[in-house]
Length: 246
Image 1 (tube, rainbow, N blue to C red):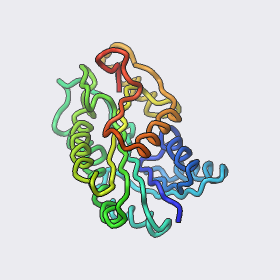
Image 2 (cartoon, rainbow, N blue to C red):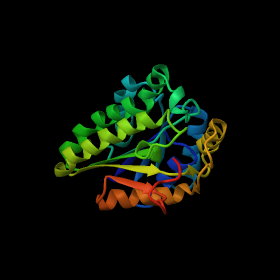
Image 3 (cartoon, rainbow, N blue to C red):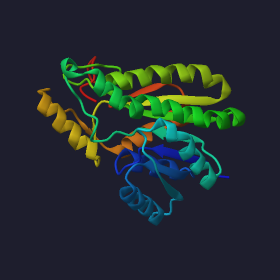
């Protein structure tokens, strides 16, 4: 039975590129997103390209619903081998640290921190039994390289990054890999790329940083998955000591 990648937070940017990259290697693709209309359109687009894909509508800000979503994927495909988790919506945005409050962190913590933890918990029994599996998590570079005026989502992504490093260290001997692609740029073909650039401009941050091709990011994920030689990959790699954005 061919392997399955479950992409949580699938969209027309990175999610679509990851789907195509792993499908080229024989993977079947489960796409999870909140908006049914856009999700169905993406599934049909991938199917037209000959990819075995299916969509699963879920609100990823509700971590208590994760087990049912994971089970629905298993019911359809029979297994899950790789998870790529990287959802973000227009409800999340950069903010100056002086304006961040507890209510903002509480609102965004399910999507950016609590739900990925629950996704991992839901798939780990299967992976432990098989002795293989991979959890790939997308974060912005501000998770590890904070910058002025670009807080808000950063503290929550930093907490998720901390958890992921520990997860990989605890599971590596069992054949299970966890890694994070930390993106120091905005993603082309992504709605959030445009929204994030606008948000940074409004907060007074200088520069909006580079724009990266999601196909290049998907290639990074495939390299991380196959080599399993680092927990974190910063992309694009900074020319100086600090990344410019993300």
